[in-house]
Length: 381
Image (cartoon, rainbow, N blue to C red; front, side, top):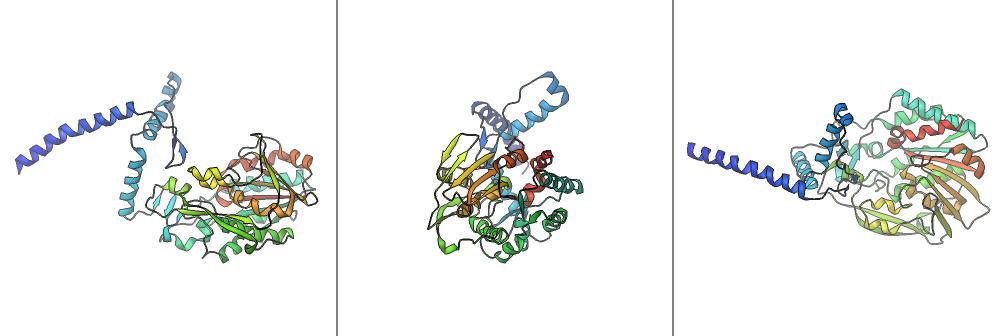
């Protein structure tokens, strides 16, 4: 017995340094990766050394992150760790819950009172700066609220509705709130959210479109007026990448093609690109297949339809709106789509110059309360 223990110790004494040496050689020999397909994020490159960065501790912190990001077979190790956690019964990783029926659901981080107040004041400031513009706000509760019963026991959903109600209570009569929660809740047994991604599905977007039309006095197209086609059945979304949970069914992405299509042009202003489709089908070959809608996020996208006599819409949004925009084409002559995360001009001046009839502010609850770009609306005064 003692002899066996001695042999094991000797073997470990040889194998452990060998194991470390092999990984050190591989780390040096293999080129650094710039992007992780599995995590869907940019990986840190070797930080530049300076005495100032070293003394401040920034170089050490960046170098630790660099080694972590560029660790050999990183994606495989992440998968192994998550599999072990899952076998031990762990249902949360990276702020994402492994819920029932294969759903990954992102937690909602409640904002501070100051954050709520700042966002309310930003919207009020923009309203004061553009009194002639009719404004509608749709703040969308996420799967953490709509599919709350799928969360693991004792998991906190974060009470999105409470904070959304606080925002709504601050809106004046000139800002029209569109509460889409009842419509989504009525459809909760349908696939209105992706299982591996934080977005709503095209069906979820269609549900919101119908509710939006009620408030705007429009007649929505019925579902049977669309040819609904599956674009892909192999979509692993942002929550799959972020959480590390594996061995889940991929999502399907469906596109709604109107049987009586509207002719239109789409101009990506910053890129100087014009096309005749809101669907970037080449993105279905990429990791982020949700970018098939509107070719991802852009500062300003201008859409002109073959209905010159109809109203003009300013849509200020996050990526939830990308899959809803195609439904709006029959109802407007022009739709200007602004993503404040990438738009650097004064929005109030732009709105006045373009003489829009309506404005829709559409965000999901998480992005609305976490992303600070919405505060730039306050600069309109």
